[in-house]
Length: 219
Length: 220
Image 1 (cartoon, helix red, strand yellow):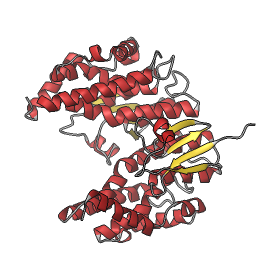
Image 2 (cartoon, chains in turn brown, yellow; image 1 turned 180 degrees about the horizontal axis):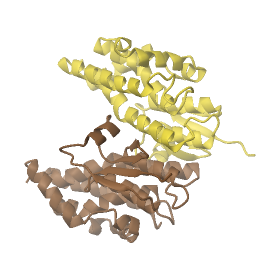
Image 3 (cartoon, chains in turn green, cyan; image 1 turned 60 degrees about the vertical axis):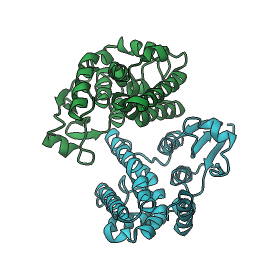
Image 4 (cartoon, chains in turn cyan, green; image 1 turned 120 degrees about the horizontal axis):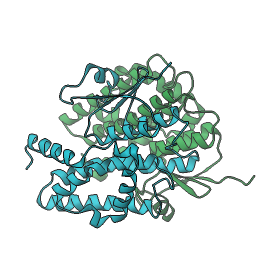
């Protein structure tokens, strides 16, 4: 019986992008269903009654919610190629720790950079760069966060790269100037087809961000 | 085979540390608990092993640190596979991780809000907390444990938080058993396990600790 895979998603979501990348890495055919977050579908509300959020991966009718949990699920089900997590428990724990750190920090830091003004803007930019420098430290001289191969932690973080132009324009700063190693890593990831086709155009994202700010009355 | 060295940087009242201790006990792993003085001064070892968060618990396995309690429990399950804490199938595992994540995001903060708040805020905090426990009751359903017939991953993530519930009840003026009888029954079932009852602190002592925390924060 063929697998039926549906992804309930929203094109600008860096969380949805993670699941797209994982599915692409594994060569899984799936149906992408765009959600209108102001008018959530009955299917979304039924598949994720607890959080009512995207992304939701639906595999043969059964939902998997929360992007990093979905990525791990994809890694375990389609385990014949492109392993995203290492098999060694210590290295696995290390990858999960850093992916979790991305989850705890990046969204809020990015949001602050995009929406704050004046002194608060300066502080937001500083915190954001400090966080990226931590990631640079963790990356070191490795090709990817996991070493030689693209993996879990790379998937967790690379999706924020598509938003970097937005952060730079709103924050009036250059991320590459501050974190050249991280940008080099991001460009390496973007050479992968699974990543390039899963991330939306950054100009389109910036336009979207401006619309959202306008809607929320932020200059 | 060389002897394994397992050390847990610990704090007696921390439900997050107790998750790790229960997991180690369930696996029968001999280990050393090293109590940290979180108010007096964190040890060099803690600061070096967890430079990002500088928090307990930290599991040191042959000197290599693993941080963040849910991550630690996963590591323990994968390193010492028997008895398994997570189910074997990917969907069951995803489901367990989802509820562990929900518990992590919601329970401790919601409970803490009750004893951190004043006046009308306490009522709101209480309602939110009960709502969250009801959602967990939904996940539990008619099962003995979150994973089914056996005590497992989600139970270990959830049960240490319950030693703080008595403090929430005292400050909130309620008994959660009245609102969430299934959850209460699950709690009692878990407490029958030696690994749980021996490790979790006396709720009265936790209550006294919370009184001290409130004083420190200047909450009347």
